[in-house]
Image 1 (cartoon, rainbow, N blue to C red):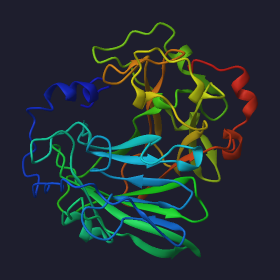
Image 2 (cartoon, helix red, strand yellow; image 1 turned 30 degrees about the vertical axis):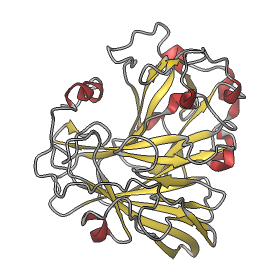
Image 3 (cartoon, helix red, strand yellow; image 1 turned 90 degrees about the vertical axis):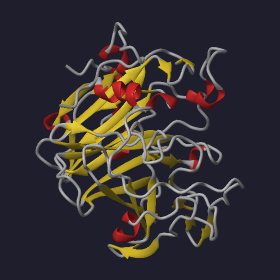
Length: 361
């Protein structure tokens, strides 16, 4: 069974745990710099030719990217330039974590066919094209289409198979009427082991120092959740979870949000030991997940009081790191991840709840 500690224990075996039957070996990436995405109407799309950065987004809105852009392999990058964060600064990462018979995979932590950490991810304009294993430095441009009468850009993303046999495919959707959120619709590729769930986990909450978790009728404070910080050997506080009845239900959508307790996280009093890439840039934001209401839904968080990789102490102490919403797997289940400069009240939460934050019990 997957446990709270198994995600982090996976780091200990990442150098030796090679996937079996992982399909094609990820191709090498050209040595010359990749071309940045280009603007085409309201969209930001990969440049033509190889190498090109696999980045798709709304001009002036949210964008997503894949390796080999800056950052670890096996993670979806989320960019929010409208917060004043220059390219290629990302506001968060999203990992793909399918569970099969209670064994949970981690796209960031597993080892690819080439023996390197992180599963390779490929893009395609259609479902089958993504699973064919396109060269990651020659990304698909994506498809511009109409969804509900609104302009949208879609692209499919697939990974190497996970050790537990899962083969998820994710359709990424960017809509002109939702400039601050990205849709992630999960499917199973042919031959995939049956998935119990496919968690999409936002993995970098402590970059924005997210310490407030917004539930149905309360705000949970990270420092009250872990009043005495007792981390595991890799620096993580124990997981906490809240079931469906604790989540906000707005018009049939489950919504959960996370915010900083600081009005200006970019002005934090950083210890000199904090590495430059961990220092927040731009305005603060509300980060959130939403999905269609489903029995068995849970939200989970864990926490840290130091940045990952000996990055130094987090100003103000413990904050949430992983932030995820899980529901039982259903092919085509769609999650929306948002990063908005607006407050949680725009999502249906009462800002008065923040005046008396709780420990969530």
